[in-house]
Amino acid sequence: MSPSLFDYALFGVALDMRALVQRVKRAAVVIEGDERREIGPGVLVFLGVREGDDPAQCQKLAAKCAGLRIFDDGDGKLNLSAVDLGYAALVVSQFTLYGDARKGKRPSFTAAAKPPLSVDCYEEFVRCMRQQGLKDVQTGEFGAEMQVELVNDGPVTIWLDTDD
Image 1 (cartoon, one colour):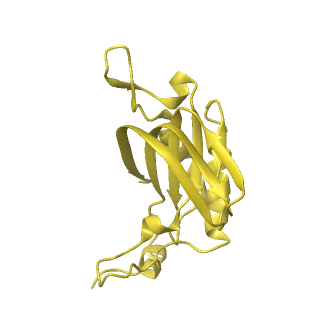
Image 2 (cartoon, rainbow, N blue to C red; image 1 turned 135 degrees about the horizontal axis):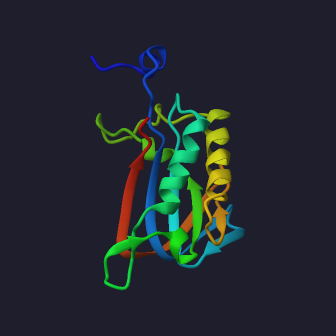
């Protein structure tokens, strides 16, 4: 039998905050069908927070996302980061990154953190991203209905989990 989230918390095992990072030529989010926030070249970060996560994990994950060397240098090698190039980031909360579809066809989202933890971690992650030296950091709106538009460049998509 696999351990529950309670077991992890009880024994002090770190859980993983999750980020899906896409290298984009441009990306935008439309919030509640009205407000539009957008970036040019940079990274689109979908952030998932799991029950038991700690806002203290955000600094490490933000530094990794902003400094991820996923952009081409002059030789066509992935050696440059969004920070190196003066690019921007768009951060969107995404609890569905913790969807578990191992049983049946309807995913369970019980592992995804609920407010206030999820909100605290999202806000802290955005704050930390703004300290990384990016040109601009735009955001979605936590808990809102959003439509995300993007042009994935490459395509390059990287999955990151925090790991203490």
